[in-house]
Image 1 (tube, rainbow, N blue to C red):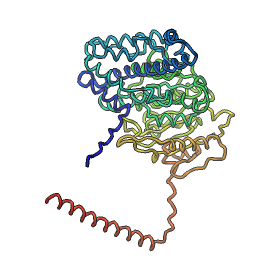
Image 2 (spheres, helix red, strand yellow; image 1 turned 45 degrees about the vertical axis):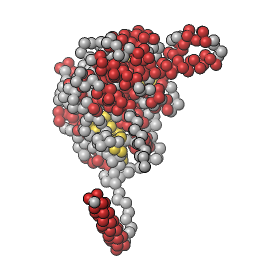
Image 3 (cartoon, helix red, strand yellow; image 1 turned 90 degrees about the horizontal axis):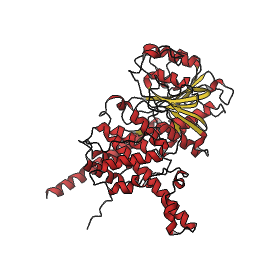
Image 4 (cartoon, rainbow, N blue to C red; image 1 turned 30 degrees about the vertical axis):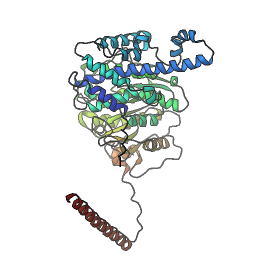
Length: 521
């Protein structure tokens, strides 16, 4: 009997793009792969969106009775695209044209020209798109194959224009694949996993106001914040977005990513160090949301010695964690709240005066909530992390009345393994964490401590623990399930189950022996 062939599993977007990057192996340094591929992904994405709008426009015009000979004039009207938040893509930058010249030796120059044309037509992208595809060191045959492979991805088929952070996803995947292969500053550019970003956003609830991320990476925090607003019936213009990023290529990626999503963002005129070159010195944000690089040791500069940001103590020169915390607080409005990711060491470290800074933050009643996160959440670091929430809102007269307390949540047992090395938080996990926080923060009578998971601790309790903020110290252990099965019945039941397993094992042995005997004949 003929066997039916198993259907080939569909490749994920990330797998397809890894194949694409693999075509450059041996011709480019691993850390260069992603920049070559991401530029082409951007070009294909904007072209797909443009063509999708063009087809929709054709249908609209036909319905309006526009004659065929007049269609080209309307179809080339850039306002018909920009008014629908679609980039205007000039003819020589459209993917169809790029694909048609993919096998020609000047394909690199054609791609550079496409980037130039798109930038000229779309001011928000000036100076942002990658160039240098025409350089001598980039193998043009492999580049042509790369164009063909990326041409097989239909972005408007795989993406619903907002529910996903496409460039961020690709960037995340590449960072994971290149873990340990990159060097220098770029190696520390941890992309924040979507489930972590979503947890921060669901807890902060940035409905409207100024949102700031001074360690913006590829812009995923802003994408998720804008999606949150949209999902709750608001408009993306309800939030104003401000960011800063140190690594130039990542700053450009963030600008590209936000432009794709139609998110107006003030990312400053260039990439810059948030400590020594704060591009938004006067900004006071309603929400700070960030995943700063962990445990950075070479951040200090002598001119930071008496910086006004160090209100709670000068951070140690060998670790930037509490420099970031105080930078966030400095940039909060009087009603602002910050949610950010920090390595777990910051919860208990006393090195270089960190313990003193932490004590002053607690005593100033700024620390709102600490969430211990599960392990294996990040592609390329195993460092365990926590989410911190610090708030100035607790000093106002609004709905927040939880003064003199810190909420501790131990979420280390949550999450589902997506692969052997990567864990994700499910929507239910995120709802459990965020729901607990909101029930406590809103003081509406719906909050109760949950042994092993959540505990609202007084500042006196925290002082007794020497201002160590590790949630496990406060939440205690989960209550054991009540076992009311009589001991005699339990022993009898377990004995029967054990004997049944023995019998099943004997049956399996007989069957295996029989099959092996048949093979020998």
